[in-house]
Length: 251
Image (tube, rainbow, N blue to C red):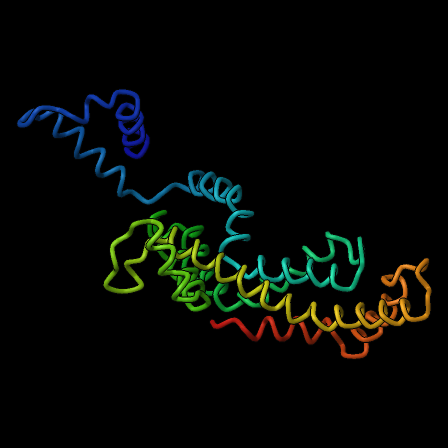
């Protein structure tokens, strides 16, 4: 009954914010403010925790895109498909699913720490929402800062007109996420260029051979496609590419 009364007082505060600005020395106003402060520091009920988690799920796609290696994997896989000259094979669903699983694999230690320090204690009612957020964002920031170029971080700080921080802990999370995404895009395009060049050489060689033979009717892409696929398969391209990208991440 006492807990229900406290939540009722909080509801009154939300509906009538003028009560929060009670005059100094008013015992009623001071009592209301004390009860509101007590409610704010209360452990969150289980039902409220469920609501918070369901709300957090709506931000999961955004978190997946900007706080994990998902962007790097998807960009490289997409440009690799173009380099091979394939239109819809492998399908987008396969590439996205592979990128998702590889992202979870690479971030395994970080996600395990988040689950142990943030999710599980929060569901058990051992910590508050603010503490759960702090336990979540700490390991994620550590992962992003480890894999972020300092030049990109400095550029983001300059664009945001942010003061030079004393340490990395003072850098806003929005700046860390932005710099991490820029670094991932840059790294993805660097890897894609290195992957693209061998297949481009094959296209040029095949095109010159067909031109010398006078076979102008047959598109060079059709002739070069089997050779590019054969080269990619013989060098175990998928495993080599994925292994090299995963090895580039620091934990």
